[in-house]
Image (cartoon, rainbow, N blue to C red):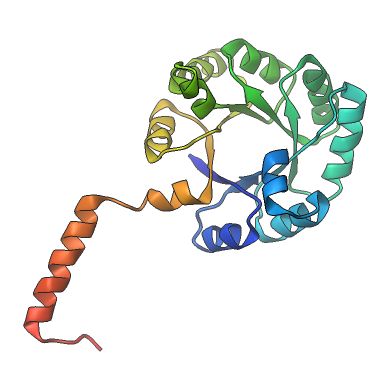
Length: 217
């Protein structure tokens, strides 16, 4: 499963990328607001750090305006993925932009039917939102599983990009159910390395090592 990091924090992206933990980056208008930077400038810097797809989202609501914004975002770097909302106009824009050879990430997916439409429109990625479904007492992981089965049934090449990931358990479950990609904030990715038994074992090792009175260097 590929790891995308859901942030515009350049320092965090650089750190994770240096560790080989970043296969791509996702952003959205809320993330750009949090960064406090110009969308073009910060996206260009991110693209200079990461070789994989970098999602930059349009803000227009009508298809022709989405296409114009998408083309402008695609000029930033070759690895830009144009992010479009899963609306009828978004699907129209997806069809045009993918037809012109651009990568497209269709976002705000909350149903298998929506994911089916995005695949038929040629989307490179579909972004089902797990956490937001969990918030309204639906199991977001069931949606990932449904999309996986539908895409496998018909050979769709659209990659499932599990989004709105909030916990390390979400990451595990996405990997088990067969998501192609997961995108998560930097703090969630870092927490994947944590386990209380690892901490306890290390503490015991350090205690025992101190008793030996030895040094390695």
